[in-house]
Image (cartoon, rainbow, N blue to C red; front, side, top):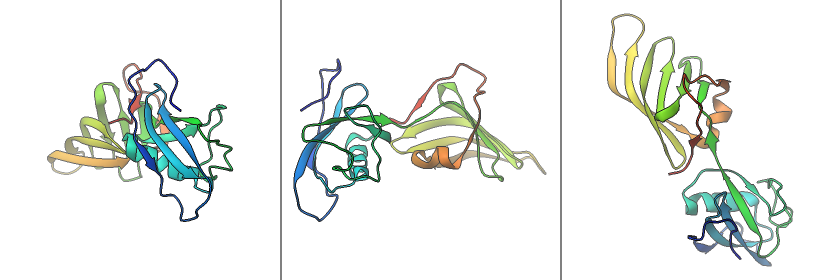
Length: 192
């Protein structure tokens, strides 16, 4: 069992996924990145949830995963069991990393908008002020750092402003409103 692709230097971790206390038949699965790099070999009960495989692969591979794709190319339902998903012993599933495309996203009404641009730059603009700075992807978080300046009243600044957003919920909580970044688009990858 292993991952296909041209990448011959494969890394893996073998482990049993503690997904359920129900004993029963188990199968061996591999999870690979799109590059073909194996991130985990796991032995799971047929009654284990696909979500437990996602969680284990995220922790072991140190990558935020958007979805898993079965050998037949279908996206696996995380609410399904391993058996219900039709996975078989020796199958290789592909982990699709979570990506946040550059653009402008709506924050809550108080904060306004955040624009993620090329070269890991961002800008937050809202009623009370704005922040310019840089962001980084750190496992499951988008970490923003910069200098905050007020728009109203006496001008104030906060040079060490920081914010952290959960990558797994960012797109659900912050709707994409524009592709505008004032430069060429580039994918912001959720890889550490």
